Image 1 (cartoon, rainbow, N blue to C red):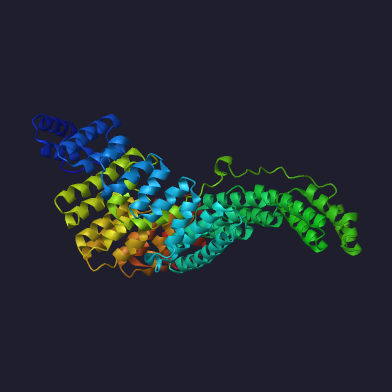
Image 2 (image 1 turned 60 degrees about the vertical axis):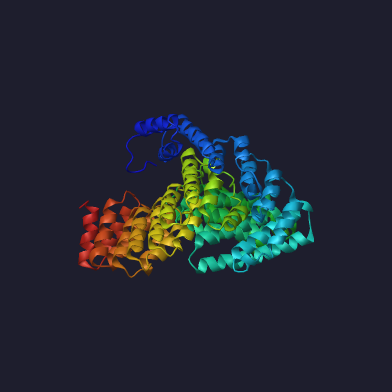
Length: 608
């Protein structure tokens, strides 16, 4: 992002080149640093500046800074040469990691006593025995005593590595059982504390555990809890994606009763959310219940189970107007197969009589769209069992986080450039022994926010612990660029900070954070805060989410509150561009007993 007080790219670039020609390298370095802070420019121009700056650093005997630039540019040999000596093992390991030389990276990380990084690199190299040894050592790490979530991840990784070494290993089974126990408890603790996004991570790992162990119960627990959290967050399409994934796995494992139930749950959810997929899900449920009944018959299960499955299928067929199939299933229930399995002559006779009523029934022709194929993708679950432990090991060091991003091509170039700016800002400050100076940390916080990456949150959280209010203020202001639920954890703390400027920065961040996942944390802040300004800003941000849930929340506020909060709710409702909210407003306008509220609702309907 462009910085303030910057004359023009052309003038600064010309001045920098002139200074290099005159041998004024220290001054040229300052100018080139100003240039690379303009992270929006085209690639070739930016890379030219970086090459010039790296050469200046080399001539100034600041080889480490040159190495950071070479790593960004993927000049690996030059980067490796810029990090000599034992003290730079971790930096050489990072170079090897970006090159995907996993064994070399693992050995160097191990020598640098970065055990998590080393274990992950051994895993990437498929050296599971070496990885397992490191994970087992980490279970005794003193830093983990008060970190139950990280403990759970370490035990999970121990189990997975041992299982990769030896299929059916008892040690692996024991470690995975321990990790499951940890994860269930930690997830419950996170939900109690209102940190559902952290609980969601635990459930995702239970999914992984179920997939790897083949335990359907773990899969079910993971999926159902993920679906529940996503429903609470109002993320409709994510909910259906998880239903699709779970149904597919249930059918693969021949868990027909579960699949049938899930089809019906997906249908009910679609209908409640006004999505057009409920009919198709009901039709799929009908077929699945029919197959389930046949499965019960073939397995010799009690005939009542098969009867109930076909009755469920009949209910689903009826709901979509397929009365031909309704008749067919009633005939099946009244037929010889069910009578032979002990259903009873009276019941069979009654089912045949019911079937006769549908003799001339037609099949409904209602259009039943499917959930789109492009959303039916198998989920590539993030390897959070590695990612979150890597974050824990880095301990919120801004430079280390920047270094982990600047060479990684999975990030857009603009993000990698800002990560490089973070790293060079700290390196430059270190030459003046000012890397911990408040002004340095303020500048670092600003650029961390501009990374717009989840990885920036941990170092910002650490900066917020600083005793200097200016640093805390900068850390909180940076959150306005970070659209993650976790951002609100720090905002809630900052809203009650002892420093008024920090509190004001938290309100500024709150004003800018409105996205679908933000509904629950925003509504929580609204409910818990006693500050009228905080409640007003939170309510305004809720209105900008534009969802049905936010519309209903605003209507509830309009009806229950008075004064400024009611006015904010009215203004936000008037600005909402969601057609599904208008019928709800109309419904409330017809039953509202308060004349002032009724008038406000009618004005909204009239567009006033």
